Structure formats: structure tokens, C-alpha cells
Image (cartoon, rainbow, N blue to C red; front, side, top):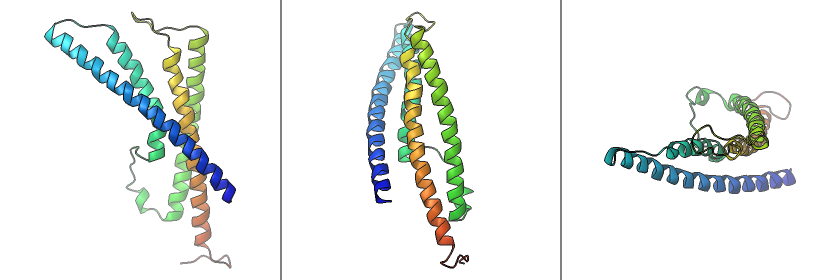
Length: 183
């Protein structure tokens, strides 16, 4: 059991490091997006002209920020939760609910990662480019989906292991040593 916790702890440290790197990249992209949008507003309302390419760059960066930031949000539990009814559940039911919820999100994330990886591979192998004036290669943009998805799936697997541990502890504390339920 000790080795099991040591391995999970090391994996979690690696995931946190990679997630922080992705968040740093997302912060840089967010800053670039802010500059590009400000430039567009300035050009449009002061000089009555606009550029074509900033919108495309911002659009692609928004996709990257969304998928690369998901794992960090899940790790730090900063994602949006509606837990009004969840807080009314007893510990045992909360454990089951966490397992079912994490499994559901994990399945969806695995599917998104596989499909996103397929589209990224297709974009790379067939040299698919954007349909706009800049003709940007689409594989880097599409690659952010499976990268972020893989990291999110890894985090969700760790959370699933934690949820199972909590479930087992809650289940064993529900029964006394004779197998009878405690009140």
C-alpha cells in the first residue's frame, strides 16, 4: 500500500508540473489574445480599418487555452460545481457519486481525446490548412485537443483511484468488526 501511494504521489507531481507548464502557455496566449483584440479595437474605431488575421489567431488560441487548461482546473478543483444536493448525501453516497461522476467525465474525455487525436493526425498527414487568408496549418491547433485530453484523462484516473480509496474507507467504517452496521 505504501508503494502504491508513493507511485501515485509521483505521478501527481508530474501531472501538476505539466499542467503548470500548460497554464503558463495559456497565460502567454491569453496575453497575446488581449493585445490582438486591443489592436483590432484600436484600428477599427480610431483608424476605421481592420486586419483580417487577428480574429483567426484568437479563435485558434481560444481552443488551445480551453483544452490545455482543463487538467489544471481538475487538479486544483477550480472547476464549476453545483453541489447543493450532493452536500445532503451521506459520506457513503458521496463516494459513490464521485466515482460515477468521475467515470462519466473520464469516458467522455477518452472519446474526445481519441477523436481529437484522429483529427490532429488527419490534419498533419493531409496537410490541412485553415480556410481563411492566412492558410494556417491546422495540426498544431488540433493537437491541443488530444494533448489536453490525455492530461485530463490522467488526472481523472488519479481522482478515480482516490475516490475508490475513499469509498473503501467509508464502506469499512460503516461496518464494525462483526460485519454489523454501526449507527
